[in-house]
Length: 289
Ligand SMILES: [Fe+2]
Image (cartoon, rainbow, N blue to C red; front, side):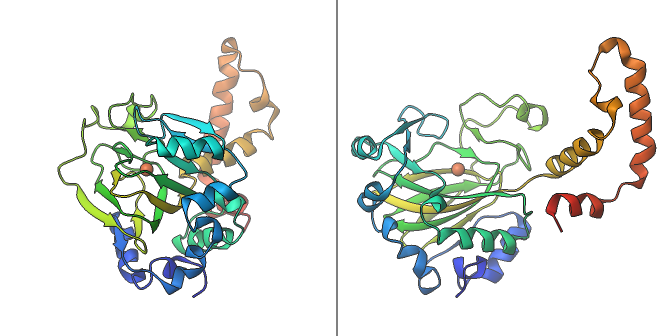
């Protein structure tokens, strides 16, 4: 099969589409031939192979929080020792060193109908036995391909915030902007509605944006993630608006509080213009279509 969403979750594409529509996680087990070229990538054959081939620093998750919020970087040589001491490793932007991953990222993004401005990357997580992540949610969309070992995931719908613009880890301070639109206080543990999913080699998990999750590896585990951070309407509109305003010397003027009358005039001008704006024109500029 050609790279893409259907191959990634073969034969579960119809059910995945339904879960995406209802914003629910989805797992399929026993994916094989359709992702054979991913599983066969030499540097994903084992953690040792990955550490031997990795030409960059590795992110190491410190044991205090067991979360990306508490990370150092280390050479592959040191990372091997830290892993042996129970710390999880993250190999970021893995598509830089495995060009075959690029077409998968592009095809999955296109199949999801996401913007060309989406930030997309492959992450490889190595988790020692009994290691895992603290409960948190992310602002991105994530597909997890379990390569080696067994890892349990707990996932729960997020009733404190929809469409989050940033991540949050339970027990950590809440991002100031997030606190303006989330229902606070945040929970102090995963919601009781959580479901448990055990990933084995060949399991592929879809984690919708904002879903609470925590993980724990039963054995040493290696997983390949396809992660997408699409722009929001806020991003598209503010980028377009900035381009438009930059054309006018009045808007480029220094914001002097005493010149509030000028600012008012600019706002009135903008309000007169706004009824003539069309989404298609803005998207044509931002998507390059
Ligand atoms: Fe996460």
